[in-house]
Amino acid sequence: MRILVVDDEFPSRQCLRRLLASTGGDHELAGEATDAFEAIARCRAQPIDLVLMDTELPGMTVEEATRQLAKLERPPAIIFLASDDESNPAMAERPVAGCLLKPVNEDQLREALNIARRLALPRPQHVEKEEEMAAETPQRAEISARYRGGVRTVAIADIIFLQADQKYVNVRHLDGELLVDESLRSFEREFPDLFLRIHRNALVARSRLKGLVKLTDGTTRVELLDCDDRLAISRRHLPEVRRWLRERDAKTTHRLSPRRFDPRVDQQRR
Image (cartoon, rainbow, N blue to C red; front, side):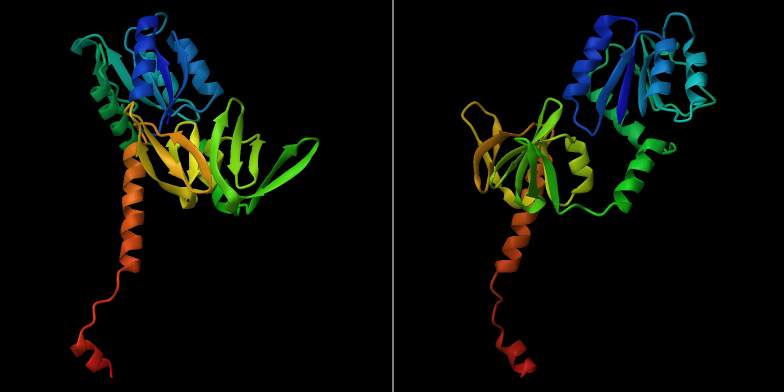
C-alpha cells in the first residue's frame, strides 16, 4: 500500500513516519501533506492506496475532503486521526478503514492497516495494470546492463542477491557485480518464486539461501552459498524467512528419508 500522511502538525507527521517504518507489512510512505487541498492534489498526481488524515485540517472540513477524494479516478481508503471520540466523522458516501485516537501507537496502527487491506474496495487501476503486464510478460532468463562502455549479460540463475544502491540495484552474481537501472520491486514481482525479500533493500536467491546466523550484537544475518557476504535481515522479514527455511528443510528431509521396509507390503507387491 502506498500511504499518504495528512496532518498540519509536524510532530504528528514525524510520529507517523516513525510508526510506519517500524510497523511490519507491505506498505510504504508515499508522501506527506499539511492540508486537504495538498492531499487531494497529491492523490491526483500519484497513485495513493491509503490516506492517514487528521480530522482537524485547516481550510476544508474532513467531510468535504473525503467527498473530494471519493470522486477521484483512483479513490484511496481513509483512516482518520482524531484527537477525541467526538471528532470521528461519520461518512456515508465512502467506506472508511477506521479512526485512530491520538496519540497513535504501533499496535493500533498495525491493526488499522490490516483492516484497510481487507476492505472490499476496488483495486487501484495501477495495481491491476501492473499485474496484467506481469502476467502477459514471460520471465526473463537473463538481464543486461551497460558495463565499462559495453553491455554485460547475467543469467537470472547465476544471481546470488540483489541490493538497492541509491537509484540502482546492485546485482551480485557468480562472476561479480552489475548495476542495473531497475527496482527491487520489479524483480520481486517478476520472479516471486526465485527471490525472497530479507530487507527493504535486499532480495536473495532462494536457491542460494544457506541459513541464518545470529551475531554477538543480537542481529541476524543470512548465510549464502557461493558468497561470503552476510546480509542483514530486518525484524519485519525475519519471521517469513524462518518459515520458508523450515518448509524447505521439511521438504528436503521428507524427500531424503529412507522408506521403511515392510515385508507384508513387499510380499503383496510380488
